[in-house]
Image 1 (tube, rainbow, N blue to C red):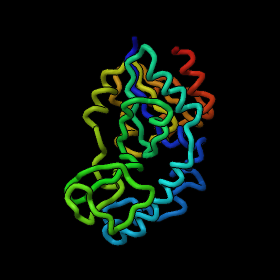
Image 2 (image 1 turned 90 degrees about the vertical axis):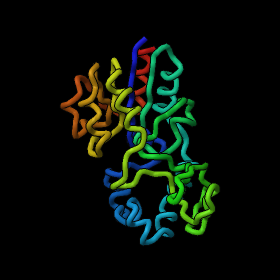
Image 3 (image 1 turned 90 degrees about the horizontal axis):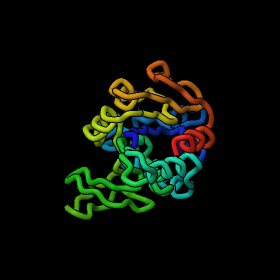
Length: 224
């Protein structure tokens, strides 16, 4: 049995129709993320922020897991000690069958109370007037880690990466920290699977390049 820690990024979900932030038609180019992905933007215009995430939630619900998600779910069920960490806020890993996914940037399908920190399953559409199910405050927001906020579950993530025999980064640009720095914490072998070399490609011992729906199932098949 091998201990494997896998980090996935937007490139894993791109082939399910969920666009990445950094491609030429990505969210970076369509929105001012200072307005829709920061606590300050939410404070200025919560309706705009909710509209943004309502649209993303609808896209997520309409998307389906692809062959990369399915392959990683199969690996999770095999005789390896697998920790699956994702930068993605969609739920496609879980819908593909992966258990106990660690969402370091939060979950699009969950709601958070900015007043008491309660969490619950988000409705398809959220609004500034929505009240917390626990404290009743009209302070509900998407359970997403925005720019300037602390990444979720870092202790568990670092424990998994440092203990792993193999650390694999799949479909990530390696431009957003702390995720981009995880390869430096790995003490075992390292592998990057990506459409093209990432910004941190030189930090990995080995690489496989190509579409995630092709390369990930082939790699998993070798392990199984």
